[in-house]
Length: 628
Image (cartoon, rainbow, N blue to C red; front, side, top):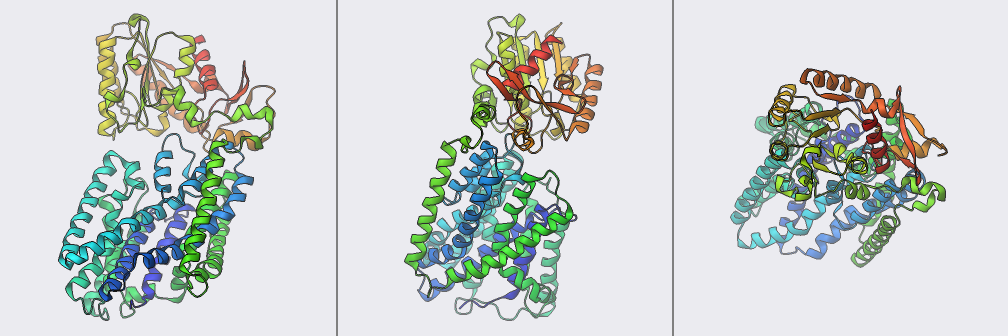
């Protein structure tokens, strides 16, 4: 039987507190996100220990394994989701936000929320701080691991423990190599998907695999004490602590740096005990108590923070402290009245667990599908206001020729279709070059100009604007330069979400000189920053309660940063001899910027998220730009 190790619960407490403090923006916990990686290692260790112990006795059962996992994960998860559903109905008044929430409800019971959040992440996504169920991505990763790993391990164990040890080491190394490659080339995919995370779970799994392979009759190590255990146990705790306090969110993750907290966790699992300083520190009663409720506390912290941030633009340190305290209290209640009873096989049989899990899953999938296909229950808004909020990301992707002339920066240039560079009159043609903010201008230009060409890619600014530009983005920009040389357009508009990039003025100036050599007399126009609404413009408008009898202006929270960025762009344009146009001047009155514009069809939002222009916003800006 597996011995209880209280230091593991203490380590769970360290991990969950790190994640909670990180998400609450508590100072000094800038690397708190590594708590998830610590959880992965612990999970890999414990699951493998259980499987091998039962397999060694000949008592392993897949039904029993999944029954145990269902009891551990699903009751507390579904309880949290049931409570979040009415809260989301009342708080997420923007139909697009409730539609996103509905997709979360759909994805979680199917164990694919990590894939959903990967698909939603990036340029078009509402801030991750505002997603109540975002944290379930890590549960999805573990659940996907549980699907194949028991089958894999039991099958290999029959071939021999050395096979299991050797192939698991190879699989872990391949996953780590993929994680390092993915962090550079497909960072968002890398973060959310199992292939880049499985090595962390296998790092924990390798501990019992090695112990069982070494001594099947006594696979559990004896008391871990002595100088070596003291030094290595504290080394592990130091590595985990260093990661929490010193890692930065800007590090590409997971990758080689992830070895630091993973290695630290492995050292603790191998060497820490109540006979070592590391084990003693982790085993103190408050840490163990927090570790026991760590799963439920983890479930509750994100919804509380997300809903609060949705209601308030700025959470005080006092309010954040209260929310974290509430997460701990709710975590204890969930552990006491949900987790613990459902683990008791005397109270709930395996059949009852599976039937209840299936019933809850069907309910959430049904609600999620309904919310998705009913556009986030748009009818909750007054009927006259519904058209103002119907512009969605899907509409935007259609308007910008998504997957045709707007592609992801991880794709190759051959994804651009011929229509992107087609023109009947090259001498009068207009080219739009930049990222998704540039693509948003397409609809406005098409209403004014017959020939509009387009080379746009997500998170990829034009003319080599990032010093740390990814290889794929650099290749796409080089392709755009080749097409400019071939097509020789008369006017080139450069635009991007300039705040998100580091300017490389040397490369930018060189590209402009090259274009002018190819096309004497070419007109190059650099369009400045678009107003930003960090919480999403639809939410700002809905919470204001304004009527739509005329144009509506609101203060843009980032106006000063946008204006400073514009000043740098204007100086660059002057030095390079190209034209600069301030979108802020065209859309704003001092620091108040146009949020709702009147069109022939009625009032419409100028942006559907934090700053991507709708068709109405694009039309308004381009008209003003061309008139200027």
